[in-house]
Length: 377
Image 1 (tube, rainbow, N blue to C red):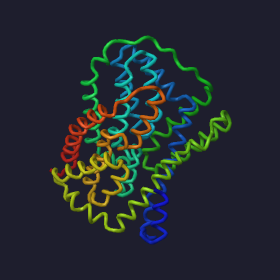
Image 2 (cartoon, rainbow, N blue to C red):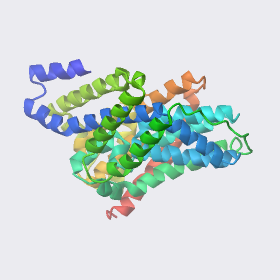
Image 3 (cartoon, rainbow, N blue to C red):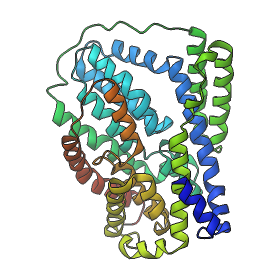
Image 4 (cartoon, rainbow, N blue to C red):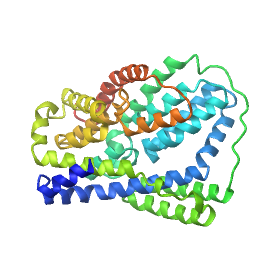
């Protein structure tokens, strides 16, 4: 994909001015992605996520339903503040292992993490790469962004949880035994990493460009690990493959826009801020995400967003919609890799049907919530 983008630039299909504008928008976003990847990998290596799940197991008081509610809280906070990929990659394994060790069916917990990784990723710019791109286009502060999408975000969190409870309420009854806590390899690293995260989370919503606090946090953690656990530092902590793919996607889609894609999509994306128009755009975004992946779907449709409310409707589609196909979001693919490593089987047919039911119910209600709270009715 990157090779195709470079080739388009070299032969002039991607004009230099358009490439310059693209770089101005996306380089800070990509810097944030790299920095947060390092932060989450390092705090995980320090044992923070395992320590949190130990606390959840204790706070659950042996009741499966209470433990599930605590897992919901962890998955939601992780997604909103640290991104959907963090929930898929780092929260999923510790939560599923917790369920396995407690002899609880792991599937409700596994589906909770991946559904929330997608559907809880609407509230803040840092929650999803699509949100960061939308924020840069709209010029909104984190508070302004949240003010635009808070209502559909709430629908996107609550309704899928109701569906999960209805589907798994029998598995969520009963109790579990006391769980042995994980050992702490290095308390200095664990406490220092916890302090970094406590300072980082409010900084990410302070209004500063998010790559600045993320970069500072990554630098502090790198210094800590150079001092305490140098062996944990490795080049693979940087997500090279997704990064290269993302850069290529940016360039290829920008090339298509420079050669008529926006005009071609305008006819099927609708126009205006009426409820039917917003439903049309959100549905198109969800369908495109499940066909080709949510990031190219957003990039392709962003120019037909037009207004803040239309762009929010598009985000509803590409963030809440990718619950049907495994490739609809990178987070789902990463989640599945983690489950395979834990020998937890997922039947994609059942996953797709359940996801389709969730999307069909959640998406329209989320768009209605947006329409009602945006003053367009």
